[in-house]
Length: 178
Image (cartoon, rainbow, N blue to C red; front, side, top):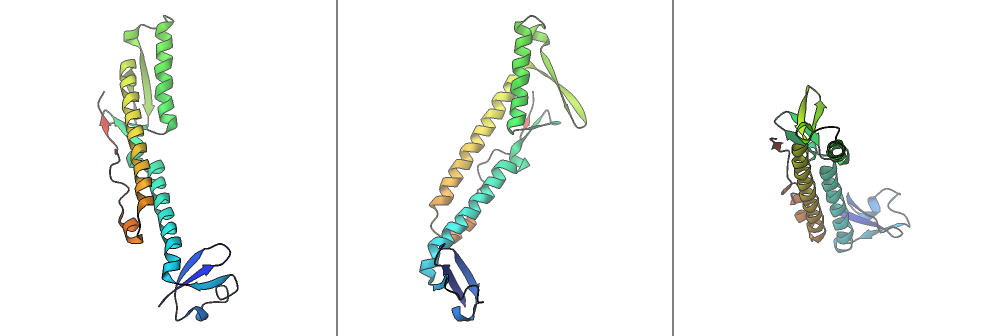
């Protein structure tokens, strides 16, 4: 039988497989805990399941390489995290400044990107195109993240939350040919 216990101080709810509330250990059969009905426990359990699903979503959104990497010319992996975006933006700015100051001719403005296993020469216009694509993916995936957060919070049953696929709609690792 499922028994629910609620902490009278913190409103924490625990779910147990037990014969009765009285059969629970002394930790739960004390003054801070009381037996709760399923209806009393439901809002707290629902919030707990929502919070866990949102934690899974955040973990996926901020850490999964499937949506945090772009591949350039089938060989060059480029991170979409802040450091990766800053690297491309800094190189564009540096090349533009060199052209503006007459240190290099615009047609010769290139950047050699080194990565494990090789390097890739990228022109300034290609870097600009790459930055636009990077920001499009980052902004699109952030909008997807926010819409999933709202959708999870709007769910009204534990089953709906558990079945919800928060990976849908994300822009995944793409190959960009420059």
